[in-house]
Length: 542
Image (spheres, rainbow, N blue to C red):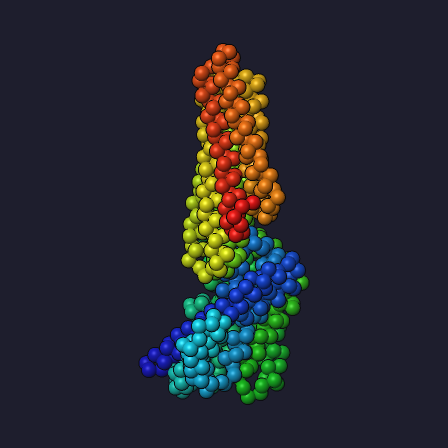
């Protein structure tokens, strides 16, 4: 019983230490982590390198894979790019196993002491991050020491010997055991740490340890599979690719490479089983990447076939956010960039809604009017989803410029939604005019056409200016806004002249005036968007 308590306590300290060390490394990397991810190209080899580096930084292949699932779901990368990241993540996770295979527990108290001292005496962010790394490192090895002490009595238990004998005779049982263990504790590094502890105490021979090791690699896929619940098809395919890669690798090693690998690692470290396990883990992942990378496109195709997409699902995707995924909130700079993309996508829906509404006014086409109403529902949904995502983003560790940009996005989303509301107003006017068979005179329609063209162009260009940081275009929009004010005044005077001359009805004149008002306010929202652009960039005026 006492051994079980020490084993569980040691495992808890190991996991906590690894988490603290990973957080410290990630904070220390800061913007560099974003730059590493941005290095990703369609070159799969580059993806492997990126996956390796990121996992080495955050100390978790599961976290990297889950992040990749989020990136794919959010449209940051495609499946061909993701497969390289996943392969690299498997290599990166071997760093932890290599680290814990060395007998350096005696340095743990010193490391924790130095880390705690630095944490309390300094206010410098970089030094605090470094202290976190040291503290996590120390706690990790204290946990390893606890687990080793707990495992020592286990070696003499007859039931353990029977279990080890069964695992040695039936490698498949070992694979299943490794899968269950990693799937339960959600960390392949911790599972391999347990293997190394048991091996160091003479409990596990290499022949029994390796099948469990292979099962650990499959078990790490459970985290990424769970993360796809509620995600899109491509996200699910990403998790399936991870699973396929590890299953194929396990079969390759179990059926073909097991004996050569055992012979090789035993030659490297004849008497050190922990080092043999760590080296096998490293070789397993490196060899699998070398062998399977040339066939990665086939793994992508397999995942696509296993998780097909239906036309109905693709249609549903239109009414939901495309670039937002809560998994990417862990990398706030990327999450913010994707929010901007989603806001621009929302604006395109408002543009379509506006065009459909005005076409309905000109042609009396009720299908166009109904299309506007459909767009408005989508716009409202997008506004809610984006706003909720922005709120979650504000809880993350943002820099001052990123925090300002986040606040700006809140305001721009509201302006875009208001443009959608004005489009809906125009669609309702189109319906009234159709029901009452009201037509504008050629002069009146021409005046509306001119104002509509400027208003819709202003809205489109304001969004383009935000997207491209084009201050010259923003200046053009502002000039056109003054033109709209002049045209509005002229159109209202012309309307009164037509009304006095009896060329139009009073009711038609009301609709004419309402249309101009809505178009003018759309242009006003365009100016609001540009003002927010100024605030984001720290400018007072354009």
